[in-house]
Image (cartoon, rainbow, N blue to C red):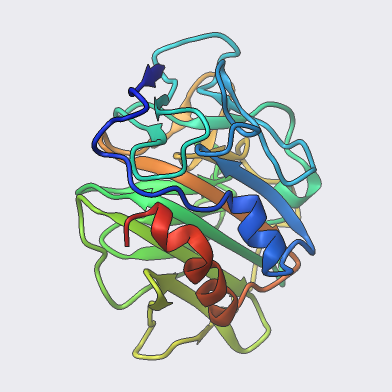
Length: 276
């Protein structure tokens, strides 16, 4: 689960800023829920927890168990180094699961009139990765942010697919990307995707409308997870395919992070970290 590269490893890029510093400098800490950063020594040094540095303490467990196991992602790189050589790696059965019962904001992601936003530094492979999700295997109620050939959000209520949106353009494989999404359900044409320095259009538009009806008022069907649709009592649901890498992730709720906001964060050190 833990792999260290020597400090002079040739694959390292120049050091960029910590994700929490980028977010703070952009004045985007309002309703910030979760910040995970493989290159921030406050977020990961060693062990089986990826620590949330948003200030909320929503820490993630490697895999489902508290000890080392086969569903644990692997830390690769130099602790505290913020370049393309430092990240969390997935081997086809790995994921992170929230280390407690779902928080209220996690259970509310799929509910009516949701507003949430995410950014991620992601190395992609051919095949899908659920960047984060709450959809359970049995009840299937919940939502997720998916990277497939393009990126998308899907809402589900039981067996019913209530709504989904995908970006127009495919995301290239075997490369680092800065991915973003902002969803403002029932707020008109404000939802959007973002990719590598510019809006990732839907139906040839920088923003789109996402409004569905029939969402469940009950909590999510699965435990909040990163790298899978969700975590459940003994197994993750559809973990990322082998070869995916995750450098950082941030999530906001009740706040729409706009394309302009993502421009700011991308330019302020995150593009450097990703070698873009």
